[in-house]
Length: 249
Ligand SMILES: NC(=O)c1ccc[n+]([C@@H]2O[C@H](COP(=O)([O-])OP(=O)(O)OC[C@H]3O[C@@H](n4cnc5c(N)ncnc54)[C@H](OP(=O)(O)O)[C@@H]3O)[C@@H](O)[C@H]2O)c1
Figure 1 (cartoon, rainbow, N blue to C red):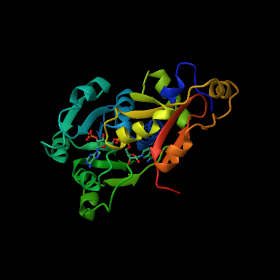
Figure 2 (cartoon, rainbow, N blue to C red):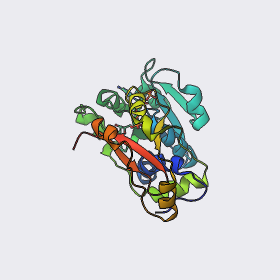
Figure 3 (cartoon, rainbow, N blue to C red):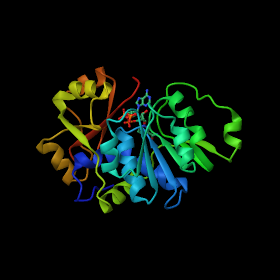
């Protein structure tokens, strides 16, 4: 897959995973323009999901802990903001008529379970977060109103890339040189990074690979990445790396 000239490789890399995941989840949900779509968690996935939801024409509700990210949520395109710490998000969503879709990007099963009652009739809870335990619910929560819960993983990154270019949707990223991978990892693990860490592998070799349409090969300091159990997912072209924590293989 080629990356359009409008995007830098650094911007494109997060779109290939976080972008593809959230865009494809919203697109396949079947929600129609004007319907309520809530985005749970404003992090790497969530900050892109808010942008996609807005541009896809949904009434976009951002759900986040505290009020710190409220101004950002509106800037990204949220129409409404709910502080999940000071209010019951489900009740607030019901006051709006119930959500057609709640896209769960926050990796906390208790928080996710607490949102099921915020779904409207036929509403879908779509979980893209890797969650930390069993999800507890009463089946009655689902059959009242024909609600459903589903999991989703990203697909068709090319579609997310094209849509992002069309609507000028960009990830917010902090870039680090590859030598600072350990620092980037620490910032990511302590959730201090806003919102994607990109390892920039800038050297003539990788740019050449980009021009030649080959995947850049990550050579320097891969030891530090492996020791920290970071999986480096190179951008398909260019000198950018979007990385994710993976359990050691
Ligand atoms: N399905 C897929 O294909 C796919 C692809 C990529 C990633 N993922 C998964 O998606 C999840 C999110 O990734 P990300 O990169 O967006 O992570 P992230 O940048 O850390 O953001 C997660 C957000 O969730 C909220 N959150 C974190 N801990 C929470 C807790 N204990 N309780 C309630 N809310 C909490 C926070 O938002 P607020 O501060 O706004 O509350 C945080 O910013 C991860 O589990 C990742 O593995 C899945």
